[in-house]
Amino acid sequence: MKEVKDFTVTAAERINELYTLLRVKPTDGSMLPRIEPGQFVQVAVNAPDVFLRRPISVNDVDVADNSLDLLVRLAGKGTRVLTGLETGARLNIMLPLGHGFSLSAPSSAGRILLIGGGVGVAPLLYLGRRLRESGIQPEFLLGARSESDLLRIYDFRAIGRVHLSTEDGSAGEKGLVTQHSVLAEPIARIYCCGPSPMMKAVAKIAAERDIDCEISLENMMACGLGACLCCVENTVKGNVCVCTEGPVFNINMLNW
Image (cartoon, rainbow, N blue to C red):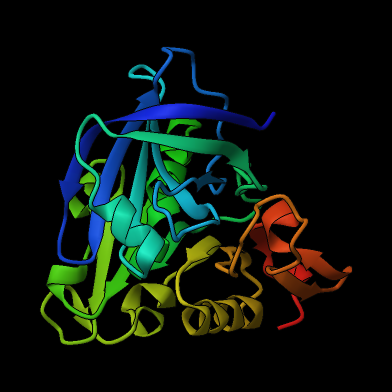
């Protein structure tokens, strides 16, 4: 069930010049609603010239701590305010929104590979944690332009094996994630989030090899409720709102 409530920032970590990790807790001490991997939140921005909430992927959930991690990328006026927040700041958040990744065991043998690029790695940390808790061992394939752009690597390594790909070769294999050698291994399922060209390339690989594959689309989402029609995607069921029908889709549902 969707809730709108106030949160307090309990930790704000500036990872690099573009990314800030915010840890938030309900201000009134109430329990977080159940949040599934791949769901997102809509955050109100306290600025006079920013009117729309900003959609942010759920990076991680700590049930014991009753806290939520949001990985925010600096992209414009709204996210500039969010990346500049400090401990003690208040946020109004609508959550949880959308449909997330499936957590069922795959029907075939092989690696469970979580592929992320850029800020697209955000939902994969919580997904990997939940998969491991359910007895499924995930592996991560994470890509970036350079080593300095890789995000929360130590946290990913605490969950499962991590494969890295950087365009300049400063960490892991040199090249794009779609060129990484691990993709030549037997794979049972792929989960993917990142830039659209990367996801389409991963989807093509999965389709050619008949690998079950789910991706999290990053269409522009203004309302998060399916009212504004900003995030419409063409699927085999027709045009649907990504914010309500997704953001996670099996590639078989997309007209790519």
